Length: 234
Image (cartoon, rainbow, N blue to C red; front, top):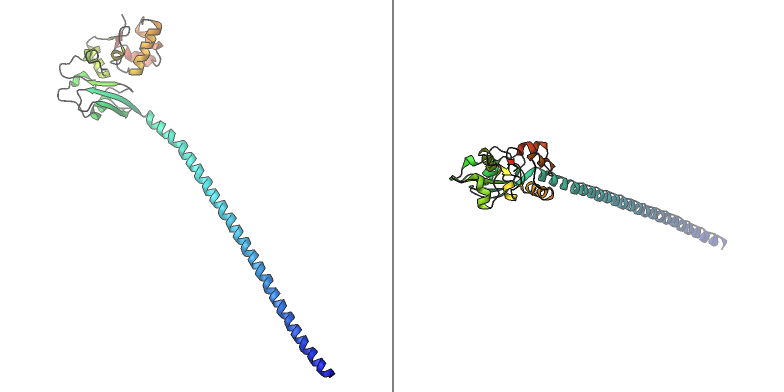
């Protein structure tokens, strides 16, 4: 009887021992599994943070580049505008109209832009080598047309080239009697400068001498010297 009880106790000990070993092994795997999952979660979180930081950096860099580009574009546009001038080409040319040319352009460039001279154009009425000014009117007279009276007869502004012919004939523009269109026949005088002369004359009365032009806005010493051969006062 005692031996039977002892045998059964040994069997129970073995079963209990095996159960304990099984529980220990199961617990070990559970702990490792949780640790592995925690590690994976931590790695995933770290990757997410790193990815977000990289995306934010790319967005920030892209925003800075766009901002710099936007700032640079107006400067480029402004720079391009300053390199060009606008002139009105009229008279005996194939395609009269308003044209934009580089600031270094000559009257010949404007005429070529307008398609060239007509067959009845008087090439002697203009100085093809003369430099253009912004807002200038380039008028090409026809054969037999009186270049000096183009402005008064047609109501149009004549070219700086035309005024040179008038000057050679002794027909200088009178600063005290000329109107807006007549003043624009003077070499280097565009619409704005002509209006400035009229405004000065209205505010201060007649010009006492050609030298009074230096008091007009935008007329410096060099410009005055160039204008002297084309203008006079009564």
